[in-house]
Length: 362
Image (cartoon, rainbow, N blue to C red; front, side):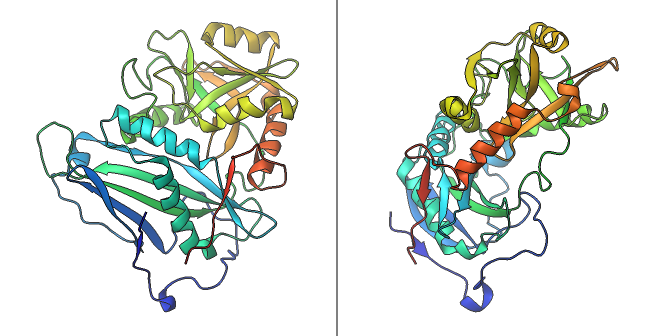
């Protein structure tokens, strides 16, 4: 890919390593530049890296009216060799194309997606925050730009990548598990829809549920399937629970559950962590009974941002609740988190192909 570089003058961009004086909040900061590529006339073209800033978009752009937009979330880490490595970026590229297929967006070859991310990180590598547990959070996204109010697939798109230097999701480590609301009022997705795509509209649809959950002191809702029988997602994360003896159960992927890269990775390396992992459909009534009987000893959510978010309490609309592991972080969740983040940061040997070094290009 022939990328055009239109960079800020050196006097206006970072020239020294970024050393924040306090822990960074997750996702709030941006680097100096962004990557853009356009789709028109049946092809992706004009790849470029330009200063981070606003973009022009027509008020009638398809994305603003019909929500034809997808995105990904990935991370890059600095290792002891002082080099930056992206983590399982190929999986994000594959999932982006899966989402594109579902929303009728033109696919982008995986190697092109990865090259775009690596080129941008290389330009802004000095923005890596030099502090414990930090990362570069990577946000690739595609949205429809055709100026048309007719409901049809757009003829033009933009693919963009922006980067957010971020501190650890848990600045002080695991201190207190989150709380989830069990309710039948909301459903994340319906069969045959966009549930297994990382579509922007899915997240807009989760806001109302989140606001409702907050009334009960919960972070989000525990989503059930449309029959209110089976557990699906923990807010914006895949759900998990752990049985006595250390077996991790993750709900079976369906077309109403986003296929989490974190979940897939944990399943792949479970044996090395000293746990077992399997997927199955999880009935809500069996899950609740398992907590009450003590068969289920830990539970929570899995996702890119936090890796693992243990849940210590599930609350109901009638005011009742059930606690997991005395509302404390469990030993298996902590063990999984430590091993997984150890791979990401280069402290533990990664499976082949999981890490890709960001080579110096400019």
